[in-house]
Length: 455
Image 1 (cartoon, rainbow, N blue to C red):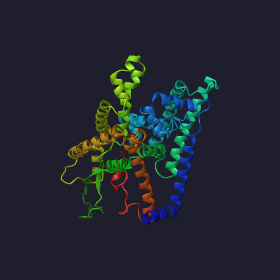
Image 2 (cartoon, helix red, strand yellow):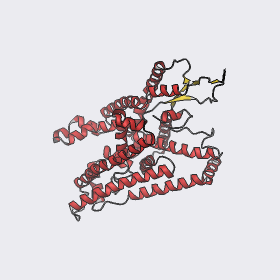
Image 3 (tube, one colour):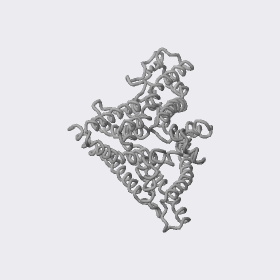
Image 4 (cartoon, one colour):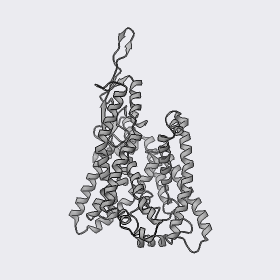
């Protein structure tokens, strides 16, 4: 405990780090304040009453509300949060895999290409926000959340403008945190939105288990265990050792450049991150969404009911399979063995016992496929874990933190932020956040980690 307080003291003594942390906290507080400012003409009480009567919260809308920290259900000016920007970023990233123009911007045009991609992402964010804003206002009206005292045309016009402004402002806050604060700003805003719901969910679970404290203690132990497993999945890498050929110096053969034991290619166990779960969730909502446009008979069919219940066996089996499949697909898009092989050739490096060129590319591809299998299975289990624990009696509000998108995002973002703080401490000759003085986050590990980050 004393070492913990000593680390906090060291963090506070570094002026630049202190300013960055305070700046980050200030902008996050502003973002959270916006989640409580209600849209003009919206009736929050009527909206919440309608949601309670419909028993909603276990679908995509509940996920959006989780990511926005309750702003969605509060009909606030930040109701859409940063999600349109995330959607636009994903679209641009996927276009980079399929469209040559976006491929050139991502890999060949350097800083100017990244600036163009940023401009395209922002413009796409505005377009997505206008569409989602109109859909959100329709959702409010259909659930009786529009006040009878306001004109409908005024409500629509002002609502779309304010929602779009709120999303753009959240995007701006995220970019400022990334530039002048600590951590990735956009990811931090999402993480804070998720974390703010944890104390309430934990409180409900404690009240529900007040007469069974041993069971509550077992749940907390299970939550800690699942979190540790998620940390291992997020940070786990398969290290492929490298050797560097000696260079010719004058007429003789000079010694190899100074290398450390950390010279390796870090192939991530879960190179796809949280994307397979997001894609699988979107696909799982498709049957329910299509049934919503059909007849009452289609909406009440057995299949639709199964897919509308996230605790049903059919839902979880299909969900698990989709996560595994999408993990392989997204890993194949993200990890390019040919780029690793080209990098090794330029660095005059090789994998011991493996010939260069095509053989090295095949070796890296085989290792990637081999480690993706356990990674995809564990990711699939984490994805369906909220449904499993909810099925054994854990409160639904607390069960959602046992896995899925929320837990992986929280773990990944917290590790990235702590890694940045770690780097400041080590640069000032202070002890790190862990005993060995090195915290490995999603982008940490060794000098060769930059190879994986570039892709």
